[in-house]
Structures are given as C-alpha cells and as structure tokens.
Amino acid sequence: MAPPLDALPWAQAREVAYQTGRAAALSPVPASLHECDGATLAADLSPLTDLPAFPTSTVDGWAVRGAAPWRVVGQVLAGAVATPLNDKGTCVGIATGAMVPAGADAIVRIEESTVDGDTVTGTPRAEREWREPGDEAHRGDVLLPAGTPVTPAVMGLAASCGVDELWIRPRPTAAMLVFGDELLTSGPPDAGRVRDSLGPQVPAWLRRLGVAPSDPPVIGPIEDTLDAHIAAIRDALATGVDLIVTTGGTMHGPVDHLHPALAALGVRYAVDTVEVRPGFPMLLATLPNAKGGRTLFAGLPGNPQSAIVALVSLVAPALAGLTGRALPPLHTIRLAAPIGGRGGFTHLALVRRDEAGDGRPLAHIASSMLRGLAQAAGFAVVAPETNANVGDVVPLVPLPLFAGEAP
Image 1 (cartoon, helix red, strand yellow):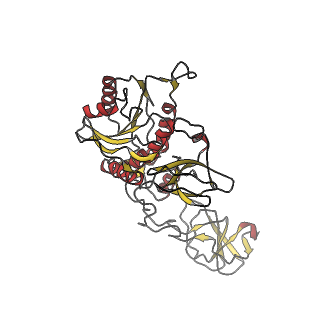
Image 2 (cartoon, rainbow, N blue to C red):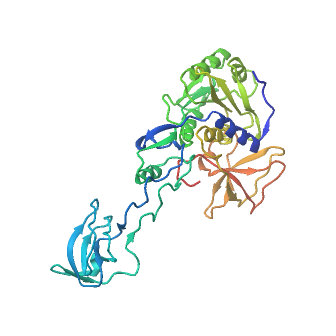
Image 3 (cartoon, helix red, strand yellow):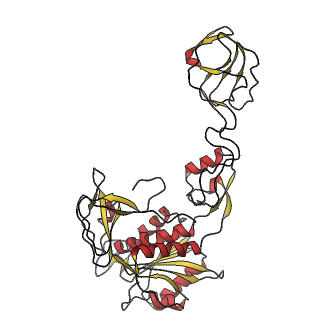
C-alpha cells in the first residue's frame, strides 16, 4: 500500500484528480441515439453526407424557370424527388423542405404570387430562397469533437447527420456511502444527533456531473466501526461501480475509520488532503476491484459545505477524466464586495450573483451550514496569501449544473 500523501495545493489537486480519472477512463461503446443522453462522445461527430444533402426550399411557393408568367407543370413535396425544370416559363409548386428541381432560377413565395388557372405571376426576392447542399456542413466535417457531452440537441444533430448510433463513453456508475452514528435520516435534529444532509444532495450533484442514477442512491448511515467501514466499502466494490463516494471519517479522530479501512483494502492515494478552506480533509484514491482493475474512490468530509468543496475540487475533475471530457473550466466573476483570504490556503468562498451579475459573498457559510450554499452560484477562488477586493475579477467554480444551464 502506498503511504498517504502530503497535502496538495488546490489547483494541483484538481489536475491530479483529472489525470487519475483519465487513467481509469471508461471504454467506448456503441449505442443507439435513444441511449446516449448524458453520455460523452468517444469519437468525433461528422455528417455522412452534405447538410442539406440536396437543394432544399426554405419557403412554400413556386420554383420557377425564366421570366414570368410561368405555366404550372407539376408539384414537388417534401420527401419526393423533383423532376427537372427544362423549359423557360414553367414552374412547379414547392413545399418548405422539398427538393428544388434542377433548372430552377428562383422560388416565388406563395403569398407573393398570383395564380390564374395554370398560370403564375409574381416577383422573386433578391435573396436565394433555398439551402444549397453543404450550407450547414459538408460530409466528413467535424461538427463536435470527442469529449463532448451528449445532450438532446447533440442527439438531434447526430440524427440529422444520418447517424444511427454513436460511439460513447457511458455514464459512470457510483455508490454513495454515508458514515456516522450521529446521523438521522428523518425528522428534526435532537438529542445529540443531526440530520444527514449529504445523502439527499450528493447523488443529485453526481447526476449533474454525468453519473447514472443508482438504486439505492445512498447506503447508510454506516456504523462508526472499522469492521463496518471495511464491509461497506468491500460490498460497494463488489457491485462493479465506477466510483465510490463516501462522506465523513476523512480526519484521524477517535471514530474516523476511513483511512484504516482503505489501508486494509489496498488503497493507492492520488490526493490526500488539499490546501483549501473549507474542506481540506478530502481524498481521492483507487482500490483494487474484482475485475483486476482499480475503482475510483472519493472521500468527502462530513461537514456539508466542506463535502461540496471536495465534490467540486476532486470528484468533478475525476469524473471528467473518467468520461473523456475536458477538465471542467473555471469561470470568472467580478466581486461587488471584498473576500478575505485564508493565509496559505486557497479560499473557496460561496458567492451569489447580484442583479448586475457581480459576485457577492454569502452569509451562513460555516463548513457545517448549507443556507449559503442553497443561494450560491458557486465558489469564488481566492488564491493563497491574498485577499480579494471590490472590482477584482476572480475565478469561479460553478456548482454542478445540468448541461445547458447557466451558472
């Protein structure tokens, strides 16, 4: 077993977590479009033909050849092959989305035309009223690179490209274990016991990071004994999940059994504590599994806000690597109020966006509190040995969101 590591600077810990995930990246598999939502492209998406594949009318009207008036010689609807217009002074009715016949000079909109028996008059607009082949893309163009999250829009684009299945890295699976004899799973806190607030929220954050829903979503609370810790982690490994996430026990107190349990199971640490406040007693590691490989393991602190700091600092980068995505980018935010530093530690400070879009630090931000988190856009990053002042533009770690949502 590799010994625990020294604490890492926050930025370095993110990169190590990402590379640890990449080393365990899920193998690409083919999947039908209906099975791809939330997965990640494992190969570039390219059209199998020009888009559009043929000249396509953008309006309802008349495809005409030569000067008005035009004699109606037919009609072309969407889904039909258009007969060429060979003679000047002729036209065919045409529907939006239909193939423009060869020989057509223009399309006259139906609302800008006059029909008298089988004769049509009108004036074409100056701009072209159809899409040429390749207007959107040419066959073989890279529309989206490997590593792109698959959203409903990506699925629709793939279908328009003529693609029936995609090579993807599937959504990873995860097990969540909650440690702590002091935790209640229902009712109000009382008599020295507190509600488990991480069990309800961490699986939801994981889903926003691309993890497949699990059943059950949470296992625990697990008894605060070494044997119970070892048994729970071993059972989770046996399910074949890609990631195990735990909460609590990351320190070395009298009932913190996580590190001894990991040692008994053959741990290899990637990150063991991070120079960040709040949340520094976090860890990322791998454990041997029944398939002969190693399973990602993330230990989050038991304090709720600290746990979410660990989630965005280590778990989000590791999952990005695991699924073949890029390291999650940091956003930026301009501060409307100062934020103090934390000495030699990176400070991740909860902020909300005000009406101007600027960041304002929140109250109720102790590591045990969630009131500030529930109102936050993310964590403003204050570098070690610095303070952040009004007007400063600082990095922002957005809270995990579904694809397409704005932080």
